[in-house]
Length: 224
Image 1 (cartoon, one colour):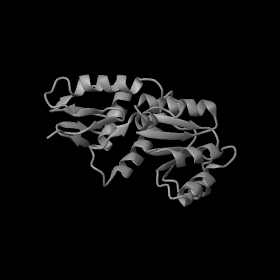
Image 2: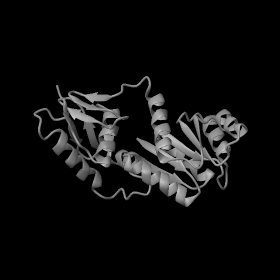
Image 3: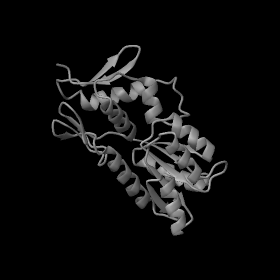
Image 4: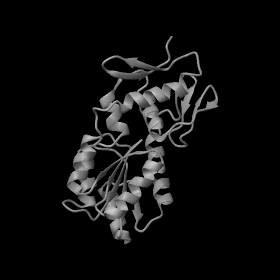
């Protein structure tokens, strides 16, 4: 799962980004409304956490512009304004939920997960390929009924592969979805993490699910 945090207060942004990454989310950060619009339109995000009081373009204008452009990504708005009028304004502009500062991270996390569950309706949850099962909400992974412990990056890689089951996913796509936008794409970190995933998921089992497409990337599928 990938989240965009649009927040100009450095301490608040670091608090949110750090917490979400510890919960195995890939997180990008924008510090202005204009940057937030650009990143939201150019990336694939599962949730956008959006402050209202932003330089350049406020959160109301940001979410309105994104909705006008057809972007349906769930938006959780953050603000120090607790007035009912402000909450109504944000929701009418296109936000899906509203959280007043100061807030506890546990509540923000619960709201983010609720938005993800809402978006996942209509899509198969949990994800499965053969006897491999991944629950994107609980973050549980099992193969043949056996629990598999993964690191946050391994989980994010596997989730993205399973969301694209049967389709070849390029290394660039994996980097863009799992790591932040400033990550060095010239490293072999994807191959290293895929190697670790294979050791945990394919190594103990006769049927191999993760396959390399030379010169392109990887695909997860059940071979006939």
